[in-house]
Length: 434
Length: 141
Image (cartoon, rainbow over all chains, first blue to last red; front, side, top):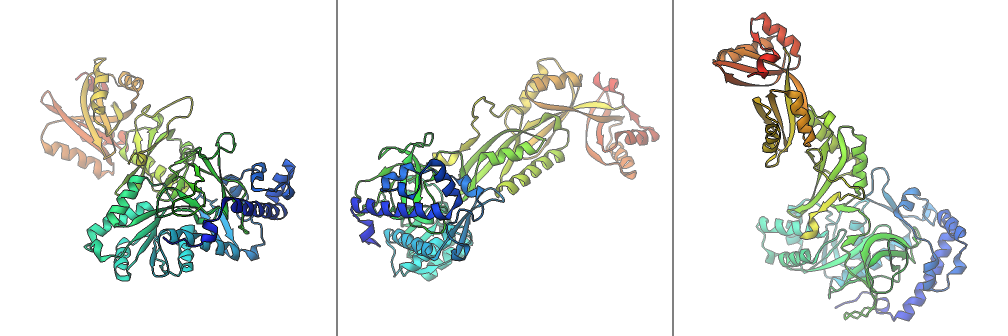
């Protein structure tokens, strides 16, 4: 099987560490001299670029959180003048304050390099037709896969998401060989294919790269069976670069991290202590080559573990285990990030409902569904159906404004939802069980 | 003239109606009339009972959301035309009827009405010599 950049992807561990140490030092210099936020933090801690003499010195550095990006919205964490930023992306966040990221020309070429490695690991090359059904726009998925696809010389079909019947028609007419989209959309396409009258053997699909949301081994098996392809897991986040941070190889036994660009650590989410190799904890990434928005020890809140053994595919790049959980309570529903606290805020602003609620998330017909059960405040319950429906509709509208999601609201009787002194169970995610 | 009706919020879940009624049964509350207004997600149980305040408190203690609404009750003969006439009197003077239900007892029919202006409705109906029931008349049924 092909490897896009075997010089790097199969590099001996000592050489990799040496390069990482150099790049970390350069990155700390870059942020120290160009980003006030980081300079102040480092000065408070009494450290500077000279404190970094090897990659192990990374432990001395402070963590960065999503809130730091929000507090410095939109561009205050950028390490270059805006005239050097040639691309801006933003990821879904709470209304009014998405997470903004910026790229220099060099950053864009790093991005297409790492996605090129990803696609090559999925057995894609210059003779392939890649259907990019990730959303194009501020979301990094579409354009990320796009430029990586062009880099390997494939014929890229920038179809973006939606219009499922057209997706299938073009898959047949153009002879798509590689599919790039979310895993749940892949299942949706598989079903639509069944109903479309186009037979599977009229298509030339051979593999797909799927990510942007957690997905189980069972889902993978379903996608592989229904579409007759090899389904490769890919991992990324906009803050680090977008898609291309890590990807499985054909052996599907962990995701190889492009650690020459994104240095990974696993920490204890409570204490911040770096955990020994192989232990499960929270993934933290440091960008060691990015110029526009370098991030030091960025906490992803994704849970995983690192595997340093050399893979049978020949790559030495460290692998992360497929992440199936988060260390915070964030949910991802239809690709949109949601914190239960956003829902609480809306409930507290409406006098007619109590702040006791239950969020039920499920996946029906391969699409995420979300229902909010909420108790009616007794003093507001009167006799009219229309009044209760008005409360329910107004709540649904307020939730949509706050979260960007269409949430089904169900009014329930008083005291049916849990009260507890500690953290009440507020979320039932039925998707995990599937 | 204004009669108290009990309204109870019910989830669309099996057993909720039975539970509400058995709570009332435990204290021997008598039910004179009952109707359920439903949507797909929930219902409102409306009842005229022998002691509305007592029933309301009892339901609240058992974690039901209950409230008292004012309605009017009219006594008439049982032919459909009498019901239609009453509704026409109200619509002629632009009083809207939110809901209505009826039951028969002792040879006469009793029609329950919730109007957007109950007092105005009473005056109009009295003007047509329609018998409006007093609270005491109905609770004792």
